[in-house]
Length: 400
Image (cartoon, rainbow, N blue to C red; front, side, top):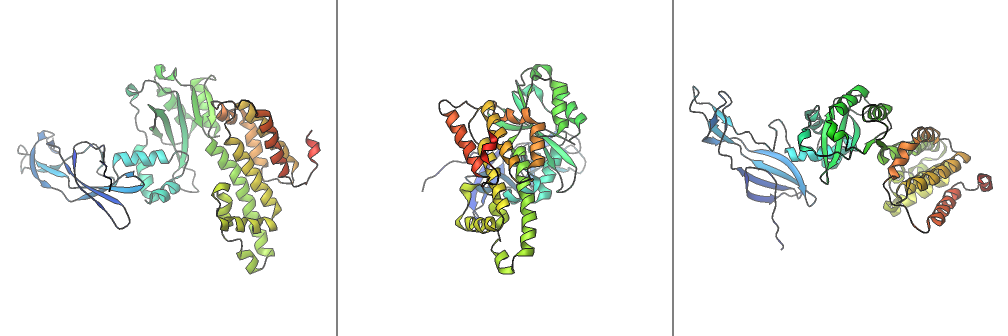
C-alpha cells in the first residue's frame, strides 16, 4: 500500500496517530507542542504544565475527499504568581475556542459560500446551517490588513442571505491574491453606504491596481463601485447570478405546468413525472437514463416546458463558449430575438434585466480568447440550433 505524509499546516502540534471511522472519516489525534501561554488573570507568561483538558474534536480541511477531524487535549498551564495558583488553557492560533471547526476549515466554508447559499454549503459539507451561519457571523466586520496586500487586480462582492426567505444579507468580499481565493471582509449588510465605506477604506496605492470588480445585479453594488473607484473600473456581473435569474424562469414555468398537469392527468400518468424537478435542474450531460425518460414524458405533455428548457440550455451553452465580448453579444441578441418570437413569456422579466445590465453582463466574456477561423461558421450554426427550438411556431424567415 502506498504511503503519504500529511501536512496539517497547523502550528505547534505533533501528530500522534491517525484512524479511519466506519464512514471513512479521518480522525487525526495531535498533541500540542506549545511551551507556554498567558495567565488569564495576571497576563504573565506561564510555563508550568498542569495536566490537560478534556479532548476536543475540531472539523478540519478535507483530505482526498474524506472529512477530517482533529482530536486534541489542550494543555493547561499553572500560574505560580497569582493567589490560589490558577490554571489557564493554552490559546492556540489555529482554532477558536467557541467553534467546532479549525480556522482553516472556517475559511474553507467562507470560500464555499461565494456564489452559493448557507443551506447549500451546509448540505454539501454535512454540517448544520446554524453552524455555517455562526462562522459567517464571526467574520462580520473583519478588518483587512492592507499592509499584507501589494495589489488587488480584481475582487468580488457576493451577498448571502442569512435566513432563507428573509431579507437580511451580509456581503462577502473576496479576491484572488497570490493565486488563491481569499476572503477580505464580511460586511454587515448590503446597503450601498456600507459597501462604499469598505471601498473608501482601501488605500490609494491599492485602488490604483484594481482593474475589475465582480458583482451581482444589485444596483447598490454597481453604483458604489462607480462612485468610489470611477468609471474606468470594469464591472462584471458574475455568471452565477445571471444563470440564477434565467433558470428561475424555467422553474416558474415548471411549477405552473406541473400544477396544470396534476389537474388534467390521472394519478398513474402524473406519477411518471416524479423527479422532473431534479432532472430539469441537471446539466444535459449529467442526465441519467431515468432522467431522460422522465423529461421525455414531461415534454410530451408540455411542449412549452420543452421549449423553455432548450432555450435555457442554449443560453448556458453561449456562456460556456470561449468567445469574445463582441461574439457573445451577437449570439445573445439572436437568442433574445428568437425567444421573443416564440409563444413563451416566462423569459420576459429576465430579458428586461439582461438589457438593463447589458454591458456589465457581457463583460464576463472580456478576458476570453477570441476564436480564430470558424467563428462565423460557429455563430451561424449556433443560431440555427436556437431557431430549431421554436418548433415551427413562427416563420424563421421573419428574422432576416
